[in-house]
Structure formats: C-alpha cells, structure tokens
Length: 471
Image (cartoon, rainbow, N blue to C red):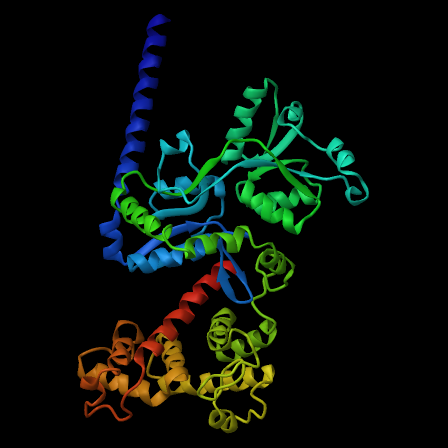
C-alpha cells in the first residue's frame, strides 16, 4: 500500500512538472516584441467596450483608452488593430496567449498581477469606493436620515453581500477587507462580460445591492444617476495602468517613453477630464439614442442609409462611415468648394442626378448612393468587390478621371491597375508630384493624392470600428 502511495505521489509530481513546463513553453513561444510589431506594422490591442473606455456616439468613435491609443499609434507609426474583450476576467489570458500585444484597460497594479504581466507606467491614481443606492425618497429626507439608511463605514458590510466580477481587483480587495475588519463579507461573483458601468447600473436598477468600483468611474456614473452614493472608500489610492507581456521589454520601454512625453503636455489631462470629469458631456451621451451603449444606432439616418446600402450591395455600416466622413451626419454642412448636404454633393453633380435640395437628407442620400453606383460601374474590370468599392470611393472624393490617371501610372510602373491597396493608391499619392502628374499618361494633372488616400483609409478604418460596436 505504501509503495502504491509513493508511486502515485511521484506520478502526480511528474504530471505537475510536465504541466508547468508546458505552460512555460507556451508563454515562451509567444515572442512578439516591438521589433516584430514594427515589422508587422500593427499594434494589436485588447480594449473594453464601456461608457468611458470605448464607445460610439453620433457616429464618432470615442473613449479614454481609444483616444490615448490613437495618439500612441501615431507616435509609434503603427496601425491600430482593436479587439473588443468579451470577458474582462480573461483579458490577461488573451494577452499571455499572444492574441494581442497590449491590454488597454484600467487595470489596478497589484502584486498578483505583476507576477503574470508587465505594467506600463501608471496612467492615473484612484481609490476603490462602495457603490450603493440612496433611499428611494432621498430628496425628501435630511442628510442625517439619508446617512442612517446607508453604509457609512466598510465594517457595516459584515454579513452583507457585495457583487463584483471574480477576477477583478475589486474581488481581491473585498477578500482583504474582510480580513481587515475581522468579519465575512459575502462576495457575489458576476459574469466577466459585464463592464463596471453595467454593474453600477445593476445597483441603480435594484438588481444587486452593492458593488465596488474605481472612484473616477463611480463618480462620473453617479453624476448621471443621482440616486447613487459613491462616497465611502474601501481602499487606499491605487495605480491604474495598461499591461504587456513580460517578454516584451522593448514594447514596454517604447510605451513608457510615450507616456512620459504625454504627461508633460496638457492634452493628456484634457483627455482624462473629458471622460471622467465632464459631467455634462457624460450625461448628454448617456441620454442619447445615438450612443452605442444605449442603442445599436449610428445616426438619425440609419434607416435611409440601410435602404440605399442595400441597393449598392454594401454593408450599411460602410456607407454610414462614408456619410460621416463627408458631413459627420450634418445635413446643412457645406464645404469651401461649394459641396453641401449629408453626401457633400457639388451643384453640377446634384443637378445631373436630379437632386433639387442638397440639404434634404433623403435627396442627398439618394443622389449620393446613385453617384457611387455610377462610379462603381466604371470599375467592372475590378473583380474583387472590396477593391471596387475603394475605387468608387476614391472617385467620389477626387473624381473618376484622376483615379483613371492613377491607374495608368500604376500600369506604367508595373503595378496592378485593378487593385487599389498597395498599387493604385500609391499612384494617387504620386499625382501630387510634378514628376508624375506631368507624365504623358496623365490627362488631368495634379490632384491632392494624400487627401484621397486618407479618405478611403479612414472610411474603412471607421467601418471596422463600427463593425465592432454595431451589430
């Protein structure tokens, strides 16, 4: 019997060692530091879809993390590839398995997490606070009466239930708090898919009694829901940061250099105040039907856009992205060149397409879609549907004849004149240079190629973001 137990112990130790080695090997196998990222040209980032981190408002992609990431990508000269987390409790696992290079989420720097990942220099400091409801009739009560009805000291949580995500720093804080106050706090584990904002809303709706949140998040949410009290701290100040893999020291150094530079300027603090201090802006978003956390709606013209996108054979979110690029969904918008309306049509084009009132949203969308279909018909030789759309968009921006010139230049330079990406787009850029726009194959001369190149790129980049935020 003793011999069998000994063999069993040895087997268990061997199995444990094998599993450890396998885990170590998997982590070591994920080797993608700054050099590899630069070679790839893309920074892959995991982000949370929430009221402060990343969202869509009136067609514009916004958020604290999103705005900072845009600046980071520009500084590092990298394309940003965003992946929305479906489970906030598993964000660090996704980082370690190599699907992303950076977790851009408000993570509290803890000793346990530092064993798993490397944190960049902290973004800001905050305290964790208890989120609770005031009495329903709180407006009619005195301050003393309100206080009597609520938790005023964390010690009063003994024997009570607080709801948080299991792998959050809030869960760990509640465990430690229980030890500190010498009594048991019952911790209700919530799904990892729930953002902190959504959990706070559960308190508002009386679906849970209490939760814990970072003070800045709790405060901005309480500005919209006055029935919330977020005045009771349950922790000391904590550093909030983003995370990279431990075997990405070059990436860590590059991001830290960027943060150091950012903190010396005012924009860094303006961005923080925009999302965590500006109560009026937060409330305006939270009440809007064009706020993606409230509604799967991009603009007031979604139904018309869907109708015309169907006629074009486009994803409606792609056409919406183009409309935003043209006018930011402002039907009375006009340009210095005389273009007007949602689709920024020129007078001659509008007349040709039977558009009498360019500022009429329906007329503008109908005419713009018809013009895009007409332009697309000029590129029937382009077999790839996405490439054909890009040619049509470029023509919408700078004119078909200029795109035709760029195709001729592409053919002259041994490039594929039926592919926009990395072929004709290079030549549209070249048409800003006298060496190229004076070439005999060019019939229509100079064009601001950078504007057209950026136009197509930005529409598709926005479309990719719309696709992650709007079903």
